[in-house]
Structures are given as structure tokens and as C-alpha cells.
Image 1: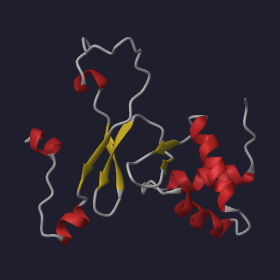
Image 2: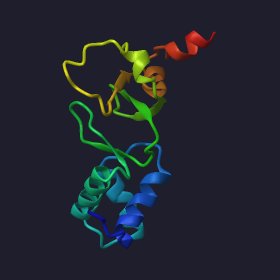
Image 3: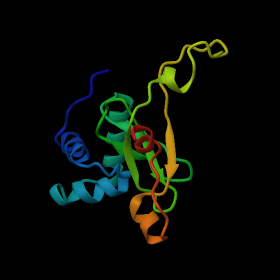
Amino acid sequence: MQQRNTRQRQLILDELRKLTSHPTATMLYDIVRRRLPRISLGTVYRNLEQMAAAGMVRKIETAGGPARYDGSIHEHDHIRCVRCGRVDDLPAVPLDKMIPPDQDWVGYRVLDRRVEFLGLCPACANASGEETHSPVADRKR
């Protein structure tokens, strides 16, 4: 079913695509409301859900927290700070590198995957005096 591209939907999408912070619907509502004061939180939620279902945005469901949204639909993974909840993009690891192709998928045909890495963001690590560690950077050395 083709969705109408309303002014509200386009504004929500435009504002989301400007961000790299992976906002919740409420966070995005606060931003969109600056340009469209009469928009409701329900309208933002509904449009985000519809755009996620249509593949226009990515919905990031994190354990124990509200869903976040990503305007970038290119293939990538996410890392979430366990202290402050910040979410950042990571380059996608090819599926065959994560799980060997001869893995028993118990009859499933894999269509997609969702990977969430957990860690401490640089700000939280610095605040607690811990060093940040990047296995990816260490491998390149």
C-alpha cells in the first residue's frame, strides 16, 4: 500500500535524517515541534512506525529502553552505551563473518539481522576514568 507523503511525514523524515543521535519518538517530537508547533506526539509515533514498516527508516529496539529511530537505512550495526543510552553506528560485519555459512539455521532462511553491541561511550568512560577500547582499532594495528 502506497503511503501519502504528507508535509508532517516529510518533516519528520527530514529532521530524523539530519540526526546521528538515533532519537526516541519523544526526542524527535521535541525537534519537529519547533518547526510544526501543532503536531502531536501521536502523529510522530504513527508516522515513525509507518515509515519503519515501509523501510524508510530503521527502528532500533533496545533492551530495557524506548525504541529509537535511525534515518539511515544503509546496512550497519549499532552500539549502545550501557550507562547513558547513547546509540552510535558501527560498520556492518558481514553475516558470513559472524556465523559460518554452514551453520545450522534449523530450517530458516535468514532475511535480516539485528545486532546490538553494548559498551561505554567515550564520555561515560572518561567520566569514570576508564579507557575506551576498540577491538576493531586494535586489529588494524
